[in-house]
Length: 446
Ligand code: SAH
Image (cartoon, rainbow, N blue to C red; front, side):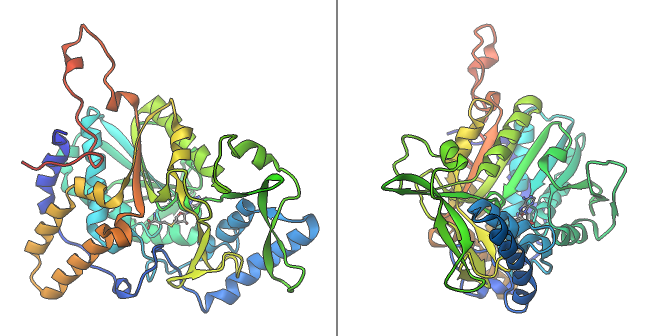
């Protein structure tokens, strides 16, 4: 595959980027495949009581709930959910952008590269879903700032979709130094500020509140946090897995099977399904449909990075607390609940409206984006051996197949014209190949 021209040019500029932040000390702790984790201990009493009490009342009054409803309550219940309530994220909450600044830098380069390949429009929105601490956006904004000469004629704005008041406050501090305005005149946004580099930033609770327009979307470890339905095949056909009160143990929850088929069983199980256990995330499907509609109508692209599979895995629902696996039904609201993303389902949801690329393994995507070159530059610029060691350690975390290299994948939605040139015999341009999409093909740096 020919080298992606835009990407190569941008990487040449990358050495000017200053090193900002080094590896978190928590990285040295042993890590499970799932690298996000939360603080346990003292938060248990506060969180679990609220969500569990609320769920027990509900279950007693109206009977079992779907796993999706349970997950939604545990994670985003407005008062007590895990994401809603949590502060202090970033202390021991580990995701790729928190591990190394290189991760966000390469993603920033991907967006500039695609913006160039798609004709350098005079404005774009960068829309991030579930920005966590804001570190990824911060790294991307630093790249945009360093590449100011490339983006000088482009009006860039940042749009963050975040349900958690705690996390949006942390993001505001990280990105604007805390200089934000609540309830701005732009009624669809709940908060507004200006980045340290002078770029407007808006916060929303839902993607539907984000203004339409030419946009680049980003979802890193977001889709895995959306509620899933679970289904089990039995001798009597498919049943939905539900959450109920355990009659044997007071105040304890258990899984049960729906006595008959539920509306979800009818809608989500394909007749040709061969697995015995299936997880479906309809919210992820709706989100992909929305992004695909927007990209088809207004242009742009979406980059989705998460752990997942291609419609092959079965039971992936799990909880994490304090770097350890956690029983998903214990102390809801105090642990991170998650399930692998089914990329084959996302592809189906986008079908027709946009082209899709991937899923490609994280280590291949980052290699194609030039991570080795960037590492060499940072190593050359660092003087002390501790920094060297940290750089190599974080590189290993991101790239090692046994760590994050193989389980995380990148997946993209792009307008059809970006990957297939419409056939037009009168147009000589139609014969020249389209520039490859950075990250999804091998990078050759000649
Ligand atoms: N992207 C970040 C954080 C991932 S954690 C990183 O990789 O480090 C998941 C993020 O999604 C959190 O910011 C959480 O508050 C947010 N989130 C979870 N469910 C959400 C929902 N339904 N709508 C909007 N944001 C949500």
